[in-house]
Length: 414
Image 1 (tube, rainbow, N blue to C red):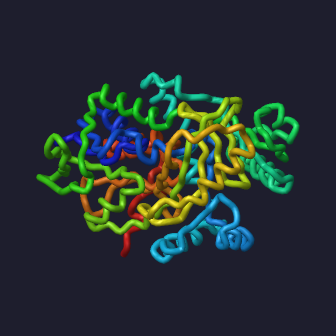
Image 2 (tube, helix red, strand yellow):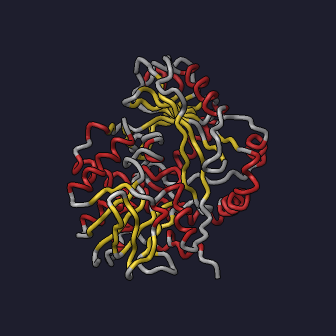
Image 3 (cartoon, rainbow, N blue to C red):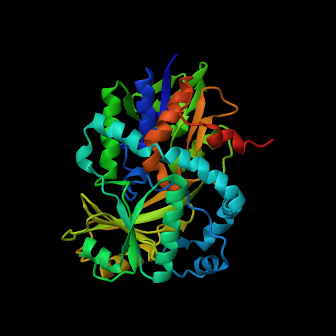
């Protein structure tokens, strides 16, 4: 079983990890309950966000907290019945968001993000997936002059600290760049470096086909069946049990379910989100985000994808309706939308950690077991990057990024 690995989870993170392992000569089996790329990785905004050099911190200003608490706005929602269960993790999230702690976290976050385009391009080229990718960035829209000025200041600060550049568009310039918009805006920031993907699930599917071409196997199975076996690991699949020397838990928002069965209590929580596609005549030059309303509008293969902000709730709680209904209302006021494509909105969950950094590295009590999850909003962006990092560690190489900030051991209780 030397140089063999099980990778549990067929999303962007799991598929990329498996491919990087196959590139290093591992006998790799990817375990997925359905088709690769059809869960969390399917439902995102389809952006490879080179500009996202900082994670989303928990707000500390009283005005924002009160607005969220009373349900004003559409960028954040919460379910009262679920708050007692998730409140301790949200409190830790709030604690890590203090500036003195957040600055170090942001540096470790940027260390990953800076590689995202190069690592995706390597896989896009190998998978023949260029037809899915546009390389003209996206625009953050601002309704009010006050919010626009804040956004300009943040963009300039980001450029000074990290070299990420953007173009500032006033209201008139934005109207020329995006004449399809039905509502005048104060302005926009055009982030030019990011890429957008017309079908996120299909891109993961192409990467999965690349894995198979490299000799990896993709089998249907239940990740919860993972057990120690003969000095390695075993999982049950539709084709029978499969053994390997090492195993990677890369199950996104479901990762804690398997980790818990092995005795690990990692503080994973989720931010849920929704999207729906709508028929439309086209016309957007780039994806756009209405920053003050918390919705993104992205041209995709199935139509215009309209997304919601974050919903704090239990992963498997029944779907809410207010955020998506409000997002559709806002989008219709901005763009000429037709009928909804799906009968019901899609719902997914982003796997988050309280310190805003993913968990990447060896489990402390089980040799050969690895954790690779907790990417929050950026699993789609970071999958190839952190997949390489995880594979390098598993192969005994010197990692191309310092892995210490992402170590699972930071959550080990004394």
